[in-house]
Image (cartoon, rainbow, N blue to C red; front, side, top):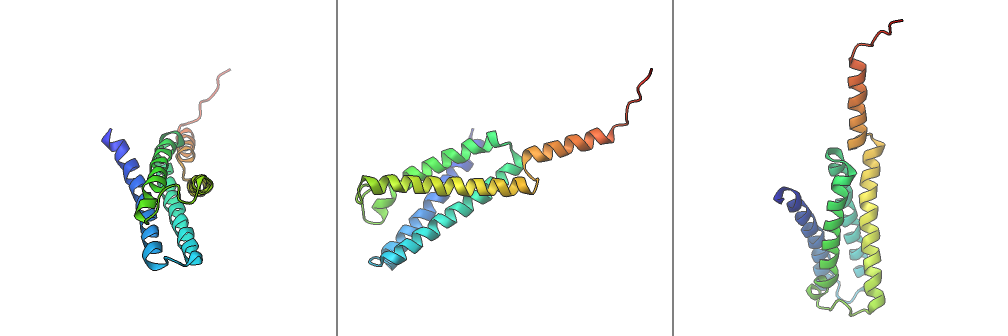
Length: 154
């Protein structure tokens, strides 16, 4: 059990730490500059997308999608909940300080970036033919060609 859920927890923690770093940089470096805050947020989402693309690429090589996609989804959900409910307190605010509309837009933005990063990583993996299914089909074809052909008798 630990072998399966420890990487999920680590991924959720890493995604949350990226958010914490972005919030602290914004709080102490650019407290009153809205444009700089937007740039830091954009960089944070870019880093999160890249992390998930790399994780999807690495996981897709070893396991079928049905094995690693739920793990990544759980990690993203945990990180999103931490980001939405704990993150604002780190930057000196509250979760609903900007209103319900801002809160819901954060959910959609986080979901879109994480889904996009994961999908990009898996599509690159599939394009190179390195995913679990392509490798299984390659092994099957090589095994089939290595056997001598059966001669049909009449």
